[in-house]
Image (cartoon, rainbow, N blue to C red; front, side):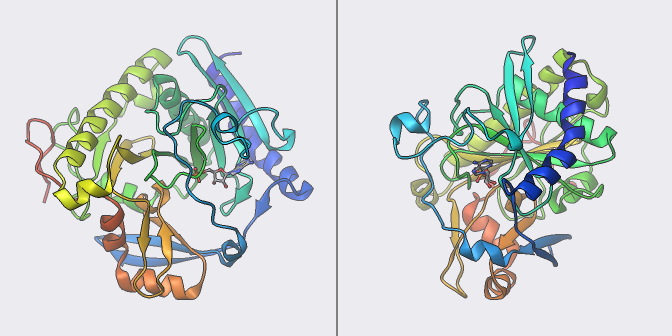
Length: 340
Ligand code: AMP
C-alpha cells in the first residue's frame, strides 16, 4: 500500500484504538489540569498531574549501546520490541524506498489523550541521530494529522541528557491546538531573512536552533521531502555540536561525550535544543524535575501544587537554561541574524 495512504489510515485509527485500550485497561490515562505562565513573550503551559506522584521514578538508562536492552541489561525488557501488546499497536510502515520500517504504538501511560509513538522495527539506539526515513515518516504523519483536522507535533529526545526514558529509538506525537506549542508560536512570528539558514529565538536565554521549512514542504514527493528534512536536520545538528564545544568549561564538564539534544518537528519548523543535563533541582522543593522535548516546546509537567509554585517562582526560562546550553556566537554566514 502507498505510504501516504498507510499513514493516513494509521492516524485515522488512533482515536478508536486509544478508546479501546483505555477501556480494556492497557493504556493508563492520568487526568491533569493546565495553567499558563507568561514569560519571554509566550504563554508557557504547566500541566499538573497528581497521579504521577504514584509513578515510580526509574533511573535514566544509558543509550550508547547499539544492543537491545535485554542483551546489555537482562532484567529489562524492551517495551518497543515485539511481541507487542496488540491493543497498543496502531499500525506498521514498511518503506523500501527510504529504507525505514516503523511500528506505531500508543503511549501506555497517557497524560494527553491520543499520545502515540513511532518506534523503529529493528532495535536502534535513542542516542542515534534521526535517519531520512525517521524524519520523512514523522513529517508525513504530521501532514496526515493536519489533513484529518487533528493537528499534532512530533518530538525526539536524543541521548542520555535529553529526558528520554527508553533506550529503543522512539519519536513521539502529541495532539495540540492549531496555534501550536508555546515555542512554536515564537518561531512562527520570527522574521526570517534567509530561509535556507537556521535562526535562534532570541527571547529564550538558552541555545536553540530552528529552521523554517519551505512552504511547499508538505506537498513534496517522498524523495524531495527526505532531502529537505535531512538538509535542515544536519544544519541544526552542526549548530548543536558547535554550541556544545563553545560552552564555558564548567558546562562542558556537565555534558561529556556525544551531544544530547531535543528535536521538535512541526509542519513549519524543525527545532534542535542542545542539552547540558537531564534534570533541574527546584530550589523551592529540592525535587529533581526531569525535562524532555516537551519542556522545550514550552509544556512542562509537575506532580503537585508545591512543584507548580516552585516552577513559577524559579521561572520557566531559567529552568530551561539550566538544563540546556548557553547561547554562543555563531557567524551570520551560518545563522540568520536576530530580528529584534
Ligand atoms: P520517553 O520517556 O520520552 O523516552 O518516552 C517513552 C514513552 O514511552 C513514555 O511516554 C512512556 O509513557 C511510554 N512507555 C513506557 N512503557 C511503554 C510501553 N510498554 N508501551 C507503550 N509506551 C510505553
